[in-house]
Length: 24
Image (cartoon, rainbow, N blue to C red; front, side, top):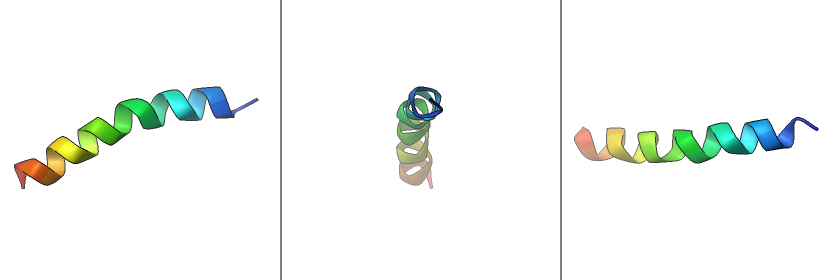
């Protein structure tokens, strides 16, 4: 039951991680 919320966060969190890694 928790997974849909976690997946939504991860799907929005991963692009942020990529942009941060590219920015640094």
